Structure formats: structure tokens, C-alpha cells
Image (cartoon, rainbow, N blue to C red):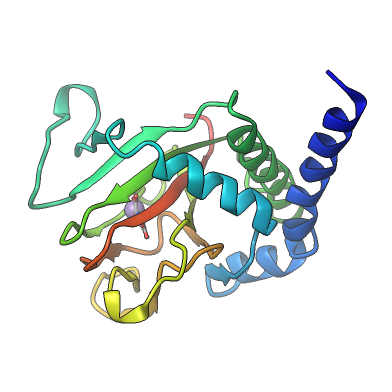
Length: 216
Ligand code: OGA
Ligand code: MN
């Protein structure tokens, strides 16, 4: 590998973490307080662009997501209509994304003693009209997902297109916030405390949804 390529790769790795690094304290305070945070321009534009190219090129490859795991697994159009692909390190943009998230994981552990031990994430694409009905990513007191993340990959999102993420209070009755899936926006929230849903959009809606987990 030529030095220049090595250098530019390392440089973008540094940039990938530095955007978020400046916000570790703010993120930890928000998770300890309201329990969620919305961050714009969370990663460097160049990395966000490469992730957009990557997911846009996967159009036919993503698989319809199911509901439940293993034996319970079922395709269910009435609950969720997204198509997904799990992220695996290898592709440089994916490796950089996962590296930024892993640094965030360590930073949250340092500040909040959450004991997060790993991060799993998938690309998700909702075709026009697709939605994900109100659900929880985790159940209180059960091991598994503790902090949910969604990173949006939609260039020039028009807010009239819909597709918002809606967070509800723990009882699932009161709407707390509506988040448009704007490019470069990262949403983090405590998985056990916020039932949420994805509203249908009039254009394709792309993201990386991920979860920081504790060991069972
Ligand atoms: C999920 C989810 C939210 C979003 O995949 O579990 O809630 O805004 N996604 O895409
Ligand atoms: Mn969810």
C-alpha cells in the first residue's frame, strides 16, 4: 500500500472519531438526563457520503427484515416494512463507522458505567409507504440492547416526505419528539425507555440502525 493511501485512510479514521469525540460529554449527559439525544453532522461528511453510496448500491441486496429471532422469526408487513443488511467490518467506510461507534461505546462506559460490551448494526431501507410500528428495542431489566442508535443516510431530505422517527414516553402514550431522517443525523436513546415508531415516507428512507449491548 502506498504511503499516501495509508495516510489518507488514517486521516479519515481520525476525523471519523473526532466529530463525535467532542460530544462525548454532551451525549453522556443527555443519556443520563432525558435519555435521548439528536446530533447533526455526527460523522465527517466524506464518511457519510461513502456510507450513502454504499447503501444506495445495495438496493436489490437488502433482505426484508423480520420480527422476532430464530424460531419466532416471521415476515410481518403489518409491523415493519424495511429491508436490511447487517454491517460487517471489511468495507473501509463500514470499518470506520464501526470504529467510531466502538469509541463511543468505550466513552459511554467510562462516563456512565453502562458495561456496554458490543455494538451490532444494520443498514435499513424503507421503500415509499413502508413503516415500523410502535415497538421497543429492549425490555427493562433484560440483558441485551441498552442504547439504540440510528444514523440517517438521506441526501436532501424534504421534511414534507414524512418518514419521521417518533419517540414516546415509557408508557408508550405521549409523543416526546419527532425526528426527520436527515442526512448525517445521529439519534441515540436508551433502548428500554423509549417505545418508538417509523412513520411512512413518500420517498425511500435509508439509515444504519444499531444497538450497544450488554452481555447476557
Ligand atoms: C429500528 C428502528 C428507527 C429509524 O430499526 O428498530 O426503530 O428511525 N429504527 O429507522
Ligand atoms: Mn427500533
